[in-house]
Length: 317
Image (cartoon, rainbow, N blue to C red; front, side):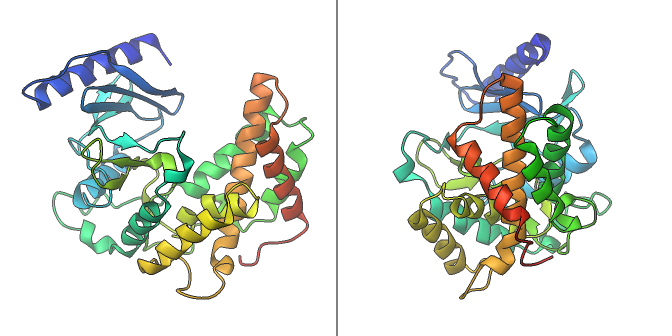
């Protein structure tokens, strides 16, 4: 990340915090993330985010507008209109308290599942009212596209790594829509697109209700994708069964449409869970190669799951 972008983003966050509060308890501005796809800084109660370089206004504005329409589900931005900074689109958000990674027993699985169910039940027609323009439709959920990007990176940066072969073979067994080669079979359900516990905050901080954050991948698509990461981790033995049961039960209790209300959920979850397993394994291998280190225990478990997937085709295409 360029120093100029981080410096100017910090300045913008500070100015926005001062304009939003009559009295700002000034302190240092904190960098929350600094990656190629996002730089995020916080000053007091304001968060500024520089989105990925390839983010377009055509895609981002409808996603921001959706967040303003459903404030009880999604954290709304301070403004639905992004600004430009060093060739990047920048948005401003209220600060919310994130999930504590040091306290896994307090992970809000039920809250996450309930918010997802509410999001999935939201009719997309509710977004057809002003200020959303009819010529800026909500784009497709970006989950499959991000999985494809992870696999492309794996091929270009870690083709010779021994773990790459089973991951690519597992990828080849997935249906075309999951590899972003054809449209998704569901184009009417509102989805988050990148659900994990890092995508929840309490707002108002520090102990307000939980809300979903990060609308970069929000769009219409297959709702089971939003359950796929915890499902994949459970299937790989990385998420305890009781936590998976809490999550799935809460989603069903809230009327979530991604899986049947009773019975086996895996026919609906199988393809998205497999795809997220491949995506996560691909990212892990690429990062390990870049850092010149061996795969850790979790990463090995993901690759092993891909190896098993290669000999057992998905339940549903």
